[in-house]
Image 1 (cartoon, rainbow, N blue to C red):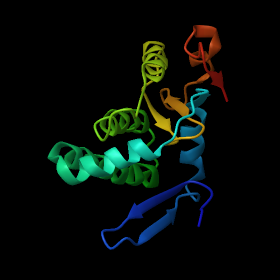
Image 2: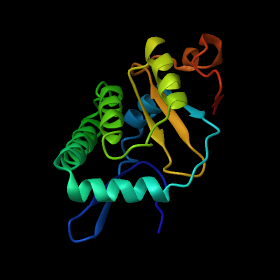
Image 3: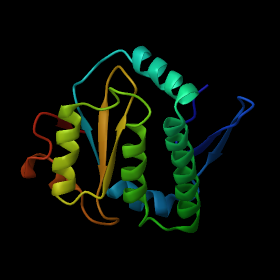
Length: 165
């Protein structure tokens, strides 16, 4: 099953899933959307090995479980901020969750993606995250809320080697 739109998705311990549409907060979502820039990295790879390592690490390493727990709390904070109309935390939460994701398994990122992200941050992006476990991989960066995000693209050299989408 798939869900479109902007949703808060909670994965419960009993393997059930709760989906809360946040689309009625369209003004807040529009502010967030205007500060995002997505890059197609052109990188494809099978996700199975990384996902298997992530599963193993979550079973065997307390640090990985702690990182995942922190990611869950960040997602809940972000949901609450969106509902309250606060967009200022979005970029920093995206940044912190992206850094935590790297603790779950090796290969979550690459030198190319790290360089793309570092260039974005140097150009003023507040946060970013890798999207897509395998197949077609994208990276997204977030500027200050309400700030135009176009200058993070090709003109500043941030997107060198990737396509802005």
